[in-house]
Length: 371
Ligand SMILES: Cc1cc2nc3c(=O)[nH]c(=O)nc-3n(C[C@H](O)[C@H](O)[C@H](O)COP(=O)(O)O)c2cc1C
Image (cartoon, rainbow, N blue to C red; front, side):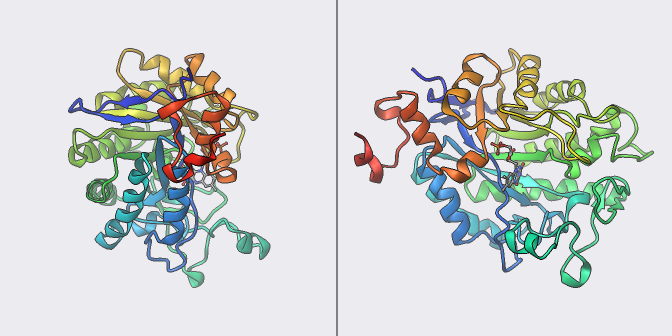
């Protein structure tokens, strides 16, 4: 019996929770495909996410989906800041459900890392990297403080009124995500984007209630989580993705992450995905499963709290994923690049791990592929 393919129930404040057919999640991955620049998901998103739902994942996450237009990483990101976008996500969610997978949306605000060129071959070939200038459609970015640490145009420091308005934008986006039928909202608090910019002393130099001490730097994420939890239905699980470590002395460290995870659990987060870094050049470890110890640290800090902790980062082989779970380091795995190469990663993993019968997550249309 494979632990990876044992169904799992994510808890929620109302207690009903969400049962997943297995513990393999599709990691959120930007597609830079909204060529109309209106934040609307379209055929590509349906086919890309739909294929991975048909390919057996238990929970399929959308790419980083912006809660406000200025929060997009690039102008070709998806959004959920208006009702047209909410409507456009509906069929994507419907298809994911039709394949037996749960649908998660990653809500995001890129802060000072917004307004960059899409990460696509055409832009790379022409040398278009980093900040997109105004005359090509770029915009003034916002963050907790001005900084040049990203090698991008500096964000403008947010006023307290702007911080308060952005908290409400996260909540409004979550309410739309509920109306679109999503089962899980994941708040993107990792990778050097806005929330992480508040958390890290490397990018937060504020002297008001949102900067300085640990309690002040974590105020923004706590406000966002509380505002989202207040509108996100109590029977639906709430997730966060954290950068567990900046891997830099004087930055956000794993000791901060375990404290924060406990606080966010108190505020109603039950699903934690542990990534790392995103502020400045990468100084962390590399190699297979390089972020698994961060998931293990959080899982151990949350022991006995009915939380579900997932590991991500160079988890590519089914036996490796199974080992992460069996060794007790995480409750689930998020698969990124390996699932771009192989949309059926989960169905293939089930075959490799000897899973049989109804637990094989294969689309009915592909059932005759068994031999
Ligand atoms: C094309 C691409 C787009 C990504 N976009 C996002 C994103 O929108 N949100 C996010 O949190 N991480 C994003 N990531 C990071 C992945 O979710 C994942 O954490 C990372 O790729 C490491 O996992 P892997 O080794 O399984 O790919 C992206 C990664 C790739 C390759």
